Length: 101
Image (tube, rainbow, N blue to C red; front, side, top):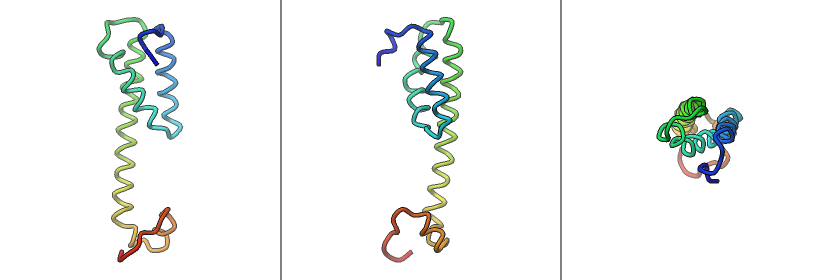
């Protein structure tokens, strides 16, 4: 998709859709929003919709960082304590690793 060919109103609508879509446990949409619209929000000359796009990009970046922090924390805790949790750890596992815990 070429953002250069889109009118500013459509850019704002698309940016808003990706921002709201991230709340449906789809943080990848926030990443796409930040990558696609960063230049529109912070590099391009000022236009009417730019302030709202900038807000959506900042909030998408914040949501993405929060999501990454929570997911990284959970993965670290799970990998470290899975064996100690016994049956609960096994039930949370998709595959049970072989070997000594």
